Each structure stands twice: as structure tokens, then as C-alpha cells.
Amino acid sequence: MHTESISDALVLCLNALGRVDIEYISSITGANYKSVISTLKGSIYQNPETWNFGRINMKKTRIFSTMLATVICMASLPAINVFAANQQRTTTLDLTVAGFQNDQKNEDEGWSWDAATSTLTLDNVDFSTAKKSCVIVDGEKVTNIVFSGDNKMTSGTTVISRKGSAKDTGVVLSGKTKDSVLNLEETGNLPVMDQPNVTFESGTVNAKGGAVITLYSIKVMDATLNIDTSEVADGGWNDGLYANGSVEIYGGDVNINAGRAGILVVGIGAPEPKTGLIIKDGKVDINAKLADIYLGTDNIKNGLISGGDITLGGDIGIFLNDCEKCEIKGGTFHTDECEKPFAVHRDSSAVFEYAKADYTELDKAEEAAKALNKDNYVDFTAVEKALEAIDRTKNLTQQSDVDKMTNDINDAVEALVYKSADYTGLDKAEKAAKALNKDDYEDFSEVEKALAAIDRTKNITEQADVDAMVKAINDAVANLVKKTPASSQPDSVSSSDASSDMSSSASDSSSSDSKSDSSSKAASNASNTNPSTGVAGGAFALALLSGAAVVMAKKKK
Image (cartoon, rainbow, N blue to C red; front, side):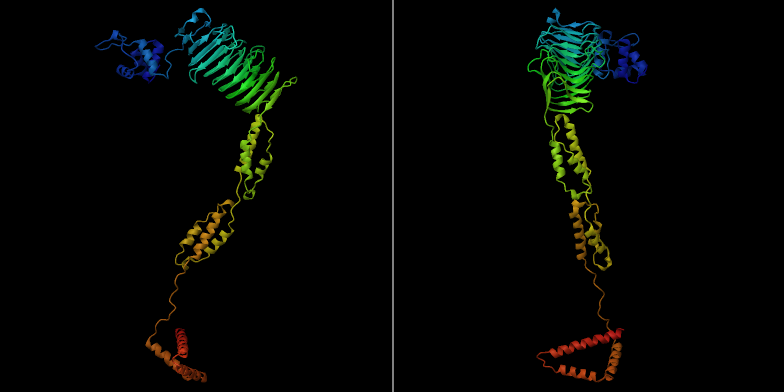
């Protein structure tokens, strides 16, 4: 045996030797004595009676108190189970005998009894009593059973039985914490519990074997209750919860796997009010061979379900035998595994009264879908089909059908694809802008920015964004400024060139025809025009400028 952990080695040492042995711990860890002692400091203490002020000889002297070390070790190593389970009890704990008029306890077995409050406290007990009950309670009063840890009771007969009965008495089972567990197992064909009334207050109770039966009522408050009677022979107590009066579930988590009826309310000696089944809250999951819930045998009984999450997994869900009615006003039902979720005996006049299913979410989905503009989408047919499939005749037990309608509409809407926005105008603007020569303009950057900002992912609902892109391009183009062209004025000419041009002009003038003379005369006349007006003179000046321009043009050619 070997371990590298000194703490684990201490546990192994206690289990193997029943005492603390430093030498043993050292041998299985390979650590020296000083390391062992240093590591376990605070978990074990030296025994003053064997205190050795000199060198400690571990082979000869046991310097540690085994009992004290064990207690401290258990406190410092909570994740490790140092001790074996509590001592197993093999005889019946009979709370009706004279001795239990006073307080009692057995620490080795892990139980105690408070006579004043009639409370039996269980802490990791292990009862195994063969063919006798594990616990017998006084049926003439209320007995509280409070449990913590993991408790086990096994018997070949009724595990928790009673002596006597009264209408308002019975057993109340409560776990100290949510994780507290009480395991009850009956290995014969008898009930696992038989009481006037049973209340499962809190904690977890696992019952395997026979049914939990009561003369009056069974109540589940905030407990987890797991019952399995599927292996009980035919003719045995193979129901889950069997009550003559009522089964009432106000919360918690109830799971039943039954060989006959999951919940059976027979209607004999029923307490007032005469409602055989009440489910107000909690989670209920039942799978039974005969019927998940069986109501009514002798007295007329009613059922009332106003809440809870209920799964019916047998062939028949709720079966009405001798009932007036079963009202279903609330709750969520799962009945996919049931061939007949709600059935009435052929000779019974009993009826189911259902509240209408909740259409709140369907109404919202329908309103939202109808508010859409079908012309905005590529294909709107799936939404139209989902809207056409709405059925407003469903009752509360068919809520899943209504929820499906809601989901179908929402899924169809979610899958819609918008048509694309109209890019015709943008295409034209883009083409025109790209046809321009950027080098012809002082600054072309705004046009380039507008072109770079084009986004072709817009859908029909975003047409305004596309239109804004068109405007940005067109505005940028409109604001363009062309570069200034090169100067159109002639270069100055040399005096020789000018003389040559003038000689040429004079030669041309001398050879001109009579029209030239007429022109000269007209010019002369113009120069003599009334100086007060200057009109003729201005015209003449304009003519001279025009002639000079023609001469210069010819010269350049």
C-alpha cells in the first residue's frame, strides 16, 4: 500500500490499525517522522501520559491519543469518510412502548427520540429488521420523523407501521436539508408505509417495494418523493400512493413507477372536503401499468388540478371511476406516451371539466405576423399556412398543441427573407460617376468616397439608405470644379516680325480692290463722327481690334 498524501495515509492508518501510528504513516508515504508530525499538526495531539522530553522512540512509545486523533482527523478531513457507517440496528424501534414516554437516544445507531414533541431524529441510520417493521409509531398521535444525511431502512414487512389510528394523526417526514435522504425498502408484497395520514414535508424519500397507504390523506409539500412498486407481484401492494381519502400535492417533485395505479384514491372514509385528488403545484411524473391516476371506487369523489407540471406516461392517464367530475383549471400536461390521457369508466357519468388553453402567446405571435407587409418578403407562404392552422378550440390539457401553433408562426416569421432594395438609381449614378476623368477636376476625392461607400446588402426596408447613397454620389459630382485651362492669349512678337507683317499688310492693302478704298473711306468718315457721342469711333476701334486678331491668327499659322 502506498500514498503520497500524508492526510490520506492517516485515514488508511486509522482504518487498518484503529490508532495513529507515525511509523506506519511514514512507511506508506516515504516521508520522514518530522514531516509526518509537521503535516498532521493540528489534526493529532500528543498524549501527556506518554510525553517524552528527550528523543522520541516511535517504535517503543505511542505518543498520540488514538481517540482524540480520530475525532480531530474527521473534522479536518470532511471529504474523507474515516469511520464506517453507524452501527446497524436489527430490531424494531417501537415508539409505543413505555420507555418512549421519556427521551431516548442511541448515538452508535444514530437516532434520538424527543418525547415532548414526538420527534424521532435519524442521522445516517442503517435499520435492517428482517420480517419485522423497522419503526412502529403510535397511530393515535402525530409523529415527526426528521432525517439528515443518508438513511436506510429495510424490512420484509411494512417498514414504518402503526399501532392504532385516528383521523388527524399520522407521520410527518422532514429532511433537515434538501440533500437529506431517507431510503425505505420493503422486500415482500406489503406496503412500505401504513399510517392514518402521511405528510412528506421536505428532503428526499425513496420508497421501493410496496405502496405508501393511508386511511385518510397523503400530502406532498416541498419534498422529493420517488416511489417504485413495479417489481411487486400481482395481488401485492403494487400501487404508488394509496389513500382512502385524498392525495394532495402542493409542491415538490413526485416520481412514481407503479405496477398497478400510480395514485389511487378509493373514496372510503374520505375526509371533508370530498376531493380525492388535489394538485396545486410541483412536478409530477407517473408511469403505471393500470392507470397513472385512478379516482373513485365507493364514495363519489372529485378531482381538482390547478397547477403543476404533470407527465402521464402510462397507457391510461387519469381514469374516473365513481366520480362526479375532475376539474382541470391549470397546470402543464405532457401526455405524448398516453393512449388515453383522460378516460371515464363506461358505466360512469363522471366528466372532465377543462379550462380553456392559454392563448396569450399565440395571440401575440398572430398579431405580430399579421402586422408584417407580405410584399417585403421573398416568400410569405409559410407564415400564411401557420396562421391558417390556428385552432382556438383547445383546452388546457392540450396546451402543447397551442404552444406548437405559436412556435410554428414564430419559426415561419423567423425564416422570412426580405426582398432586396431597389438599386436602379444607384446603378445609374455609379456608372455616370465612374465615366468621369478624375484628372479633369480640381478635387475628385468626395466622388471617390461616395463610390467607396456603396453597400449592396440593403433590403427593401432599407431603401432610404440606398437613396442616400445615390444622393451622396450625385451631390459629389455636382460639386466638382474643373481645372483652369492653359492661357489662350498670343505670345508677344519681335519687332522684325511685326515689320514684316505690316509690310505684308501694306502690300496686301495696295493690291486690294475698290472695296478696300470704300472701307478706308468708311473708316475716315467714322473718325469724323460727332465726338460727343463717340459711337462711330467705338465701332471703328472694335473693327481695328478684330482686324488685328485676324492678322495675328494668320501669323501664328
